[in-house]
Structure formats: C-alpha cells, structure tokens
Length: 228
Length: 223
Image (tube, rainbow over all chains, first blue to last red):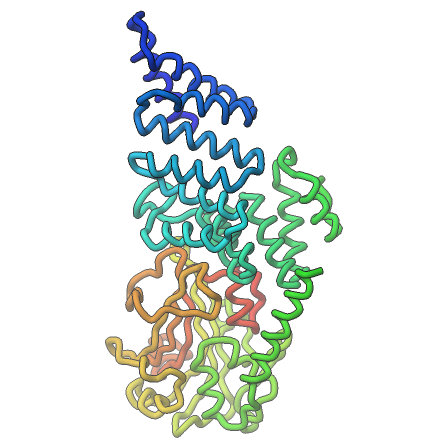
C-alpha cells in the first residue's frame, strides 16, 4: 500500500504544486502528505487528524480518498478502536476503483478485532468462493488467505478446522512463524498438548523476536518453551 | 476457565457421539458398511470387532486398530494378504491395501481398503446393498464410485457432493477429494487380476484432517 500511496501523493503534488498558482486543494494535499508521514512514524492520532483535514473541503479523487481512509483504518486499529477501524476500512473499499482481494483479508482481521468473527469468516470465504487469490482472480491461494481463515475459525471456536487451515497455509509457506503459533493455540484449545508444544517450539526457533510480545512468551512458557 | 469448560463439553459431546455410533461389529458385512464410510468408523469398529479367525491380522494404532501392514509409505510394504479370505456378501476379500503418497504440486494421496476376487462389476453388485450412502455410488467409466469433496475451512465432517473434480482431474489446492471406489486393480503384483475396494483421500490432506479420518496413521507423516 505504501508504494501506491506514495505514487498518488507524488502525482498530486506535481499537479498542484508546480504551476505556482494558488490552488484551493494545495493545503489539503499538505495534510494528506502529513498523514502519510504520521503513518510511517506510527503516530496514529496524527494520522486520524491529518486524514480528516486532507479530506476536508476538497474534491480529491476517489482513489486518494480511499487511501486516506485506509490509513485511518490502520490507525484506528493501532489505537484499538476497532469498530471505527472497520468503518474506515469499509469506506476505503467502497471508494476504491477496484478493491484488492487482500483488502477483504485486512477487513476480516478488523472484524475479528472488533469481536465479529462470523463476518470475518464470511469475508475470507467470499474470496475463496470467488477464486480471489491474494494476487487477483484465479491466482491461487497462499498463506495470507489460510492464515486469516484459520484465525477467524479459531475465534469461532472451530479449532480443528482452524488447524487444518493453518496447515494448508504452511504447505505454501513453511517458514511463516506466526502460523505455527496460531496453530499451536488451536491445538491448545483442542487439548492436543503434544502438537501444540511442537508448534510453539517451531515458532520459537524461526520467529523474528522483535515482534514477540509478553502474551506470546507467556503462552510458550506454559509449554516450557522459551525463545533462544 | 470458561475455555476449559467449553473444551471439556466439546470433548464429551464428541465422545458421546462416538459411543452412540460405535456398535460392535460381528459380521464381515457390518465391517464393510463401516469401511465404506471412508472415515474413522472402520478403525474404531475394528477395536472390538468379532470377525472370522485367520482373516484380517490387526495391529493397535493408538486407540484404534487396523489391518497390519509394514509401512504405507514404502513400496512393497503396503499390502497384507489374508491367510483365509474374508467373505463379505459372497465376495471373497483376499487382502488389505494401505498406501500413502505425496506427489509434488498435486498433494497427498491416501488409498486404503480391500482386495477382492472377481470383476469390478460383480463385486460392486454384491457389495452395493452394504455400502453407506449407496444412492451416490455410481458408475464412473469402468469403475463404480461415490465421490465427494471438501474445501479447507468447511466443517471437518462436512463433504460437498457438487462441484466435484471428476476422474483424472487433479484436486485443486485447498480441497480434498474423498472417493469410495470399486475398480480393477493395477496390473502389477500382488494386486494384478483382482478388484480393489478402496477409500481414498486426495489433495490438500493435512495432519489435522488425518487425525479425524485416519486415526490409524501417525498424522505427522504428512508434515
């Protein structure tokens, strides 16, 4: 998304900034650019504020509005304001010329965070039903689809199906550490401690430690697994 | 705490369902019916089955039993010839076959079941009344088969009867085909000249699926 956003912002600046004449949209574009900078700096509140100013009193193309809402959705997620994240993401997708299948997966994650795993599952199933692989229609399904499928199924308490989904994703991408962790959690719910431990151990061996949080370490510790 | 309670309730429900379905098999015909489901019932029923002597040689695999074979992954180790044939509704079953294979880009293939004397048509005609869900057991070329398909993420016990891949077509990634099939055996020994009565799982067969459908196997063999 960053690449697409950067390209659009750059185009907007060229269109509005080079002529050297006053342009009512110029100020708004400055806020759009600030929103992007704030997003890169993980300053979520500023992302929301600058995003609102970017959208104010202008006639931005729908594609740029879509990206502004997408960044706001990410910011709301970062702030754990999940229902607002869902709303912003849905606005973003409505405005997108052609929503990408990946957007459905991102929205699915936001619905899970917002406590609606049923809707989260429907979104992944929509992609599956319509052969919307991560890279477009008919491109096949890979780890992201099965990972989000597994997470939605886990939240719905369908643990066996969740382990199957994660296993399927791992056939595509066996080095994705978080799928082992998530499958370990599903095995844990199934009471299958042996398989859970094997997955937590595998996770501990290949995960990028900077993303491992206290809750993950605590779960590993339950199984006597620690990060090397 | 709540999660533990839910897990406990779920396990109790599964246990209750298994207990309700597991009836002691006392005839070869009952065994064939259990087998034709192509799921764990066959292996669970063998645990307490009372079958004619010197027919199937069984081994314990975890909490279930299955006909003994050397190694489902190893060519030459996939077949047990019965000392005395098992007669099922007039069909002479002379052995048991159990093979697991992984083919790059196509997925995992599991075949298990009986090897019978007689032509596929004769065997199918005699066994059809015993076969589970036999209204869908229909001719497919020279074979007679009942096919179904599951998409990863569907409820684990749910199989679709529409949108099937069809014979000779690779199962798409993310799907599993399950087929019960009576067909002429391979031309190579020891099956040559016989008819096979097999179940198969093909495609994206994962360890969690095996844990449910093939409790006689070590599920990790596909990891």
